[in-house]
Structure formats: C-alpha cells, structure tokens
Image 1 (cartoon, one colour):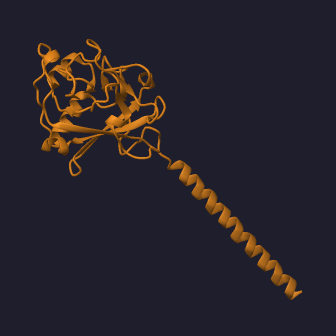
Image 2 (cartoon, rainbow, N blue to C red):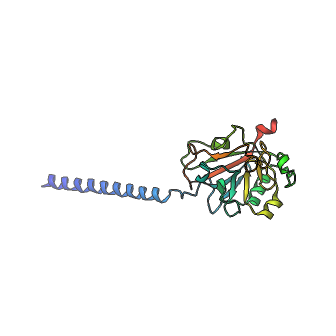
Image 3 (cartoon, rainbow, N blue to C red):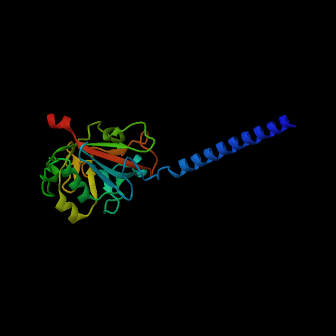
Length: 233
C-alpha cells in the first residue's frame, strides 16, 4: 500500500509541474503578443511622436508612409507632410511638418542655403548643407540610401541640400520636406536638377523602387543626417 501511495504522490507532483509549465508558457506567449509593436512604431518614431532628433548621432528621424501610386507614376516630390497641399503627391508621405523638420536639421548643425526664389528657380541649383537621406522599416533587411528606393530615370544621383525656405514653406503650406529637383519651397531639395526638370522640361522622371520598398501604406522611418562625404568635396 505504501508503494502505491508513493506512486500516487509522484503522479500528482508530475502533473502539477506540467500544468505550471503550460501556464508559464501561455503567460509568456500572451505577454509577447501584447508587447508587439504597433505598425506605426518604427525606429523610435510613431504617429504620436513623428519626429526624433538625436544630437549625439547627428540624425533626424521622421515617420513616413509608402505611397504606392508612385511606383508607376512620376513625381518631383520625395517626401511631403500629409496635411500639406501636396500631401498626396510624394513617394513617401511624411507625418512631421516642414517647420519641425527645418528646426530639427538646424539642431543637428545643418545650415540653410536660402538661395532659391520663385524668380530664379529654373536657373538656380539649391545650396546649403548636404543632407543624407536613408530609409528603413520594420522587417527591412537594412537601412537603404535614398538612391536605392527612389529611382532617377537618367541614373543620376539624388543629392540633397538644406535649402531652407522656411518662411515660404509656411506661407505656401505645401508640406514639402524633400523635393527631387531644386526648389524654392521645399526644406531640402536635389541639387542635381533645377526647378521644373520633372514637370516642365521632362528631362527626368522619378519613381519609387517597387522591388525594394514595402507595399503601399507601410509605415517607414526616413533618417536624415549631414552628408559628411559631400562636405569634403
């Protein structure tokens, strides 16, 4: 009898350990699910906090979203804030306003060129601190350079400068953060082309790279920093 009683105690103990183990696994699984990031949380930015400045790293990160329309159609807009008049016209839809973006670039040490005006736009190349733009998203294989995810039909380099234009940006309310030709309104723009190269002369077409970018509507992080290689040249 004592032997059978001993076996019963061992069986109960074993069942208790098994149940406890299952309970722990279930709890951990539940916790893991609860802690999963919301889709709009990417690299420290979110809809609640769409712009982040890291002075130590010298970066400005802006929450954006892929606009799949421009996988096939051309545009002169790289990144535009969603509530601006050009908010639906860019490869990447941004959630930080131009003024906040401008101030953030100043905070990391960039200096605006402020050489562009509507009068000289078609004959003038934007000036200002060279700015590097990179892109990543949750699940991306790496951080991509802008030239990998926005394609120039001529194969030329997208080369951003901190044009400035803050007063005009606020006045026009286009929402333009990054323009793909030199621009008197966008906060940064592409020195490679003068204003109108896309929409007026048609000398270049810009499209989003559908082979690398995630699907339409995916939240991404755009990371800006001073392009030190360009400063040397």
